[in-house]
Structures are given as structure tokens and as C-alpha cells.
Amino acid sequence: MSVQMVLLPVFVQIGLTFALLIGMVVARRKTLVSGETKIRDIALGEPNWPKGATQIANCYRNQFELPVLFYVLIALALPLRRADLFIVLMSWVFVVTRFAHAGVFVSSNDLGRRSTVWLAGVLVLLAMWIYFALKLLLLI
Image (cartoon, rainbow, N blue to C red; front, top):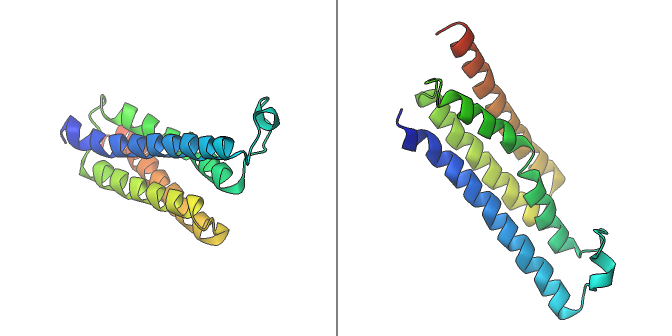
């Protein structure tokens, strides 16, 4: 697979992370400008942001949990020449689950739906890691 094909889902995932970062900044700024949140209430990192701003911030923070294992996998598979069609297709499935997870997280935040989508992403990533390990260790 070409480097571009392998890295495109990574760039899309990174785009999601930056979009959430920008959304978090906009939501927080809006609450500060409107007076809904006072600087003294959050200056030391206290969790005093309104619900909407907190949802986006939590979703943004979540992008530094499970996706890190995705980034590591691609960072290993690419130079070791183990990034094949399966890895690329599963990367796209993983990224789609991350978008779905983020969508639920910042909208309804329905824990049942969010957990189901999160678990789907976990299983996809687990399958990718097992495939990568078998391919690398057994040279398949």
C-alpha cells in the first residue's frame, strides 16, 4: 500500500481531534463572553464549565486515549512494511467509529449508544493489532 493510502485515515482522525479542540475553545469562549462562566471559577482547572462545553472537552480528551493505540500501530506498520489493504480498510472503519463516537458524545451523549460505538472501535483496533502481530511474528 502507498504511504498516502495508509496515512489518510490517520490525517482524518487528526482532523477530528483538531475540530474538537476548536469546538471546545469556541464553546468555552462563548460561556466566558456571555458571563455564564466566570474566570475565577475555572482559573485553577476546576470543573465548572457548563454541560455543553464539558461534553466537547471530554470528547476532545478522549481522542488521546484509544486513538493513541491506532497511531502507534500505524507508526509501526508503515516502516515495517506491514500496512496492507486489511490495515488500511480497518483503519477507515476505526476512524468511522471515532467520528460516530464523537457525534454521540457531543450531541445526545446517550451512554448506551456511545458505549456501543466505542466498543466497536475497540474491537476493530484489537483485530488490527492481532493481525499486525501475527503478520509480524509469523511472517504471514
